[in-house]
Image 1 (cartoon, helix red, strand yellow):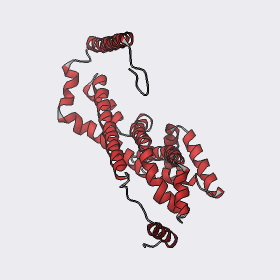
Image 2 (cartoon, rainbow, N blue to C red):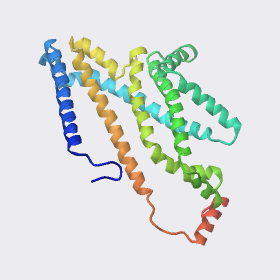
Image 3 (cartoon, helix red, strand yellow):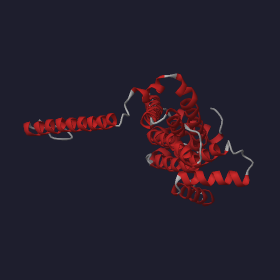
Length: 296
């Protein structure tokens, strides 16, 4: 029996796959046991090291303030980088050279520089040429680096998403009298957003994780930096501290990805055609609305 995409497995292939599956499970269990034994041998699983994370003190004093700073920096970077990336991506598609070339230079320049270098540069910039206080400077530098780098990456995502649409979309829109900015705003972008959403969310996850670079280099008191302070305060529970922080990062990024998946499914359902057929007068009304910019 065969499938459209592949031949059905025979008895030998089924036995071989069962052997591979069992071997993988055994190997994975062995790795887990080896990690557990190594941690237990070093007394990293002792209750005294994990006990502080089952009380409110560790969360209210270290984890929650660090999490607040992480979310604040990530949210500010997202709010600025998303629209800036969309503008740069659309500008790269412009027919005007004086718009397309500068946008291309900006995107390619900041996309090629490591985000950590941009953060360090931003910190020195705010230190030398602004009156930003030393307490706020790490936050400003982290957000600046995240915005410059991720806006450039998002610009390429937007440009690729729009170019991936069939040319017939824009040709049909122009055939009924829509101007180019209306084609982009009403036809191309709404369709491209659904296709771009997984890539955009992946970049937002990167933004959340890259806030940790500010804590490592610029003394920005984010979540990962709080783990170092917390480990030093409670003494010799580095594994426990970083495990708790890792779980928090996983929860945040998984929640962001799940929300994006829900939003993508919702957008796809809303974009499904109702099956209505436009008559000649409907097409004429749309063309008249596009040319005058007023409602029919």
